[in-house]
Image 1: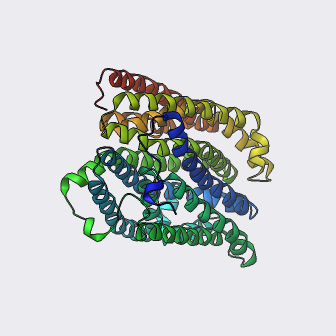
Image 2: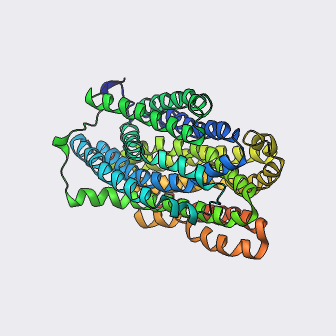
Image 3: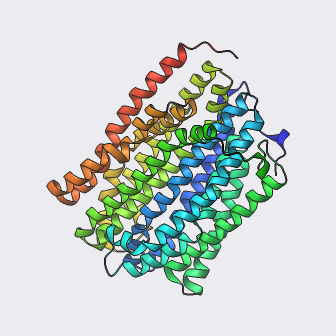
Length: 450
């Protein structure tokens, strides 16, 4: 593991190289996370359409659980990187330790609350009697490991915020390798079905938290974690929460959006639910590298803002925008051209494949704008622009998507259901483009002190 002096210098003059050195390990790490979902879906898909539909049905619950970690992690990363930029590693350590201390009771509370109402939640999601047993098995097993999952998310954000994205990458690769080995053993050899897939994920999370514990105990990073750094100051909590809240709300809205998606698809049959689930997974696979790139690059934005080097922040934002848009447009093109062979990896049911191909094509018509959206969100979070961050981040799965999903399927049926995502993506991307142009203009007019 890297020693503090081996960390990447966040004030490196070669900005584009610095961003890529930080972002590439983060991209690989989160892409590995996407690949893990991909591999799980392939193994589960061999159990039949009902199994893949059951796992897809629990996806909104997983997104909801991850939402809290995402918000807490984003707020903590912004706090840590800006304080490191201001040369205040003590305050960065206090914020990081506080975030981890808050994660434990939050994780336990959510686990208990969701476990007690799991059947009702799955019924609200539209789980049919044929899907419900497998969905209950998968979701209930995952819930037992949620607190560990939450701690892993926050740990990853802390490590990346101090510039050690490579360590975070290797931790994710370790978890993925273990999950991939355990999936076929638990699902087929031990005949545990979808519960086996969840158990494999749970054990991989235990491995990841063990690696992070060793990292902080051996003081391999700049930030220190310990009970002596934990002080529950209201101002510190508010600062972390204010930046993280839009990210949490966005992720919660994503869970609500998926819930509405599956409920709207359920009347069209299990094949439609499975098809929508496949399309969602493919779009997630494309989104995670962009998110990984922005998460890795966030340390540069936050550090530059803390150091009041506004010209550097502007330059970094422009470079990030170019890379993110180039990738999102390329991924969109690949899905549009190769939709059928990609969908066929998830299912051999012709009805599911035909519906999923249509869903994937519509979902990715305007996916090229997703890169604009996430760079805008990351920049606004780094600058502490809470309200504007909420406007951009809540658009795609919130105030644009929800009215559409409630109205379009009633008017146009399954085609209307698919159109909801495309319309929301297009309008949200245009809003993000307008906002990021304005913020770059503001940065141009600010005198740098560095």
